[in-house]
Every structure is written in C-alpha cells, then in structure tokens.
Length: 320
Image (cartoon, rainbow, N blue to C red):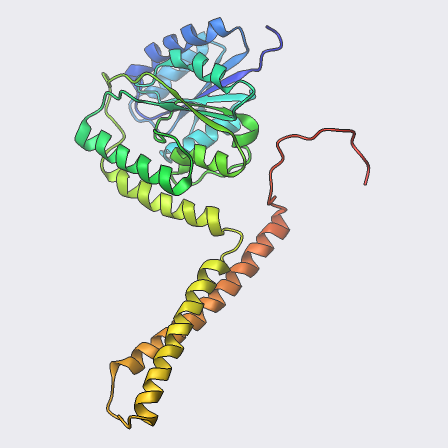
C-alpha cells in the first residue's frame, strides 16, 4: 500500500455552493478505499454565491481538501491550470463540481491508466443533457476534433479524465484549450485511451455551458491545428501562400503583356489590378514568413524550449 502512487483530484468551482458538500462526501467514499495518498484540490474561479465559505468549512473538517481561490473568474482552463500547479501527486484526475461526473468512476480511470497510458479520458456515452442545446453541438465538435487532430476519442468535452503529471507538464494551456488536453498530450507523445463513465443530470445550480461555446470550439480547433502543424515552421504556410500568389501574379502579368504587346489591346482591364494585388500579397506573405521564422528560432533558442519529449532512458549514464 505504501508503494502506491499519490492521487490529486482537481475541481474548478464556479457558483456550485449547493453541490459541494454532497460532492465532497462522494469523493471521500470513492478515494478512501484506494489505499493511496490523495488530495482534493478545489479551485474557486471567482464564485459569488458563497462557494468559498462552503469550501473553507470542508477544508477545516478534512485535511485532504486543499483550496485555491482565484482573484476573479478567469475561466475553466486557467482554473484547471492553477489546480495542476498547486497539486502535488504523480496522478491527476479532473472533474466538474456540478455532480454530473460520478466520483465512483475515478478508481476505474486510475486503474485504466496503469503503466500503459498517460491519459485516460472519460466518455459520457449516455449523457443526461438536452439534445438540441448540448448533445448536437457536442457531437459535431467531437467529430471535427477527432478528424482534424487524429486522436480517436468520442468525447473531448468530458472533464472527467486521469493524467500522468509528467505529460501535463509538457503541454501549455491557454485560452479555452482544456477540452483539447488529450490532443495536446498525444502531440507530445502521450499515450491516450478512453473509458465509458457515468453521467448524471444536473439537479442543483445552473449550467455554465451552452450553444455560445460551439463557435469557440471551432476557432480553438483551427488555432490548435495551425500551432500543431506549423508552430516550428510558419514559413510553410506564409511562404506557400506567398509563392502561390506570386505565381498567379506572374501568370496575370503574362496575360496582360500578351494583350498589350501582341493583341494591341490598350484599354483598361481589371486584370491589371488583380495582377498588382497578387504580386504585392505574395511578396508581403514571403516577408511575413521570414519574420515568423526568425521569431520562432529566437523563441526556441532563448527559452530553450525542447523540440522533442523523452519518455524514458535505459542503460548506464555516460559523461559527455
């Protein structure tokens, strides 16, 4: 029992006062039988309904509860990041504080993590949410993320996930990228799996999700795809676009020259303006690509940011 890895459970909290006491009781029931060191890290993301007072009462009664209070509402991604930073154990589990995720699934996720995976993502196969406002947008978003990222998960939006700390430390979270954590982990070499989990209907409080998040998911997905494919080689995008514009511009120049020099057509034509636009756009795109390459190289050199991630090494260490 003493050799079991410790477990940190991270929960972002936003106006969930009525859910916190029953949630903590269910977490204790699920985590105590594991026989491993654990902590429950609550991150109050600017709650205004008295959630912080409830959390302080829970922490006073249970030494396993640790509290982090943000100065204002920053959003779920910053709240999760704060929880990761303030957690201490090698295995990290995240879930929502609205009682829709079931704490009894945590032991199953940790067991599935084992030695074979770095991330085990929950799959709410049978969700208890409205179809039009929650399920339909979720299915569309999950399909797009799955196709564009190449990570074959069914439910990227489920907060209930288990991670190995070393993989989380290798990814950078910002904006609203928390839903893409399995994708980010896979892109740094993490081994990702999926497990069906229970999903309950919300009985207290109000949902923080809605249709307005759908467009944010699509924008973040485009951003993520660009960053993943071209963050270290931006000139492949800008340079390619610039060369294509230059090629079309010179083609338009040939047509204009043929009209003037061979056909003797001197009347004004919109093709001249198209030619100038293409040539200018192509030239500027090439220069932007070169500048982006300089910025990226300077960033990697000054920050010593790795371009690879090591899973493990074997054999005797040798001095260089």
